[in-house]
Image 1: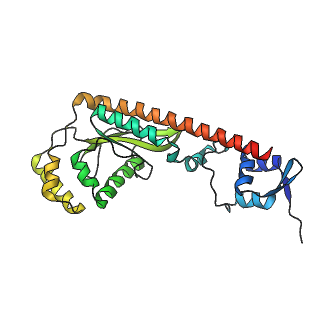
Image 2: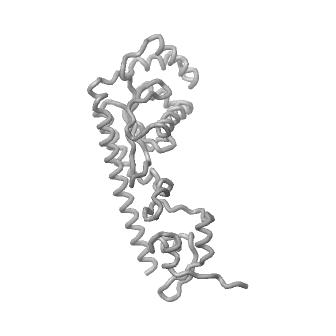
Length: 261
């Protein structure tokens, strides 16, 4: 029977292009296998080969010390954001700006509860089809929009603006503010659109029409300033997420050092 080939820690980190702490962490969670000889580790080459070939099913979520920056997109998850802080700040921003606001993931699904939701949108969000349509609008924005997106129209015909939230240069979420018009609408066209919307979402036509009359036209001064406000809020969320990620990484490093020293 052939003898299992073993690697030193240094050989392993050279092959995988990661640091020593990450090697220890991978030994601890089972992505690598090895034996301890005195104070030194000898790591199974077959487990290293398996990891390189994609055989490992586990994922490094928070480690930013990987040599290939392009892999960070899959490593940084939106739940790294401190959602309690994000929700609180989003609520305050929404009230001050007098717009609805929500923070969404790359797939368009909300990370936070919608702040300052208007009655028209409350009715849409009350049904599964409406929630799915809103998420589809936000997903489309993420797919087509850039970091400096101006106003865009959602599936219900309302206007929104947004800003990207990035951590370590990686887009993880988007702050979206809207639920308003930016100019007066044609009454006949609006009625026809809302009647069609009510039918597609299986909502009460009369109730949706009544709530549409409460949709505000965003004052022009606010329109001009909203993009800047959103960028500042998104930058704040990015900073909070980066600090939390850094703290978690430090705690993981301390844990790994304590376990393997």
